[in-house]
Image 1 (tube, protein in one colour):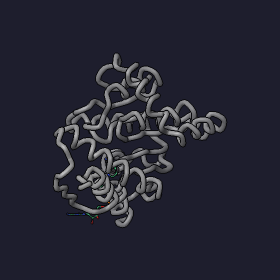
Image 2: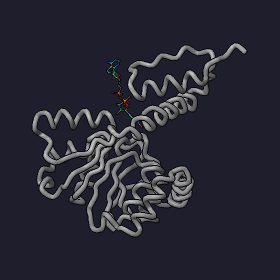
Image 3: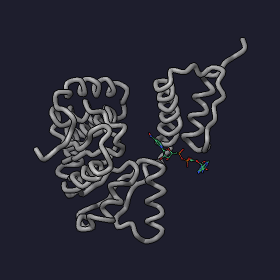
Image 4: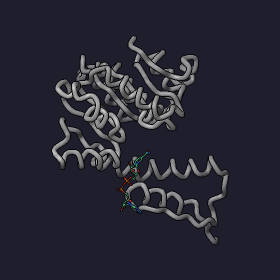
Length: 236
Ligand SMILES: NC(=O)c1ccc[n+]([C@@H]2O[C@H](COP(=O)([O-])OP(=O)(O)OC[C@H]3O[C@@H](n4cnc5c(N)ncnc54)[C@H](O)[C@@H]3O)[C@@H](O)[C@H]2O)c1
């Protein structure tokens, strides 16, 4: 297998078990796995992906590679969200090269992005546009081989639209965040829930009775506000 950089391959078995657990809540991906096994739509296509290295992403990776036939490399889109056991499982049990270590510094983060680009992708999958902007800044030699890409999040779509407006975007990128199912569910309910979860885990604070301030009232902000309201104090 190609190069990879993860924290500890011995964590792999625990990571695989957590991937299986997450898969139980991912019925659409399970459906796609069955379909891809027959159709093999990505046979031989090289993909470089820059996404949160979590159980859910890992299941997407195994769907695209094991089922779809893609030749995939994964790097982290945020050093803080990397789950080291999942990174290990992808390398050791699914032969998917991963470059991600939780808490990696900025220099390592970009080294990992370059390592994923050494894969010479035909398709990019991005969550925040770091991969695509690195291609445009430092790796323009890759552009002729790229058919297109996907961009997951609001921030990335804003960055790419600005590049497109200036005539600087060299290949088409699908704005996944524009799909109703993405921003309705992921941004509003997903980010809403996980933000509250993060605050509770970090502080152990009782929410009922607190004054909760949300700055920015878009999809995520509304979701956080809704979830916080659900934990409010009631009088009866
Ligand atoms: N970590 C995750 O899993 C995850 C998931 C989805 C979105 N995101 C990120 O969350 C952020 C919000 O996404 P969204 O989909 O809610 O975007 P959005 O465009 O729907 O909402 C952003 C809101 O912030 C407001 N805003 C902008 N600047 C402000 C300022 N200075 N002060 C107060 N309000 C301001 C805007 O008016 C808008 O209402 C983005 O950075 C996005 O990339 C993260």
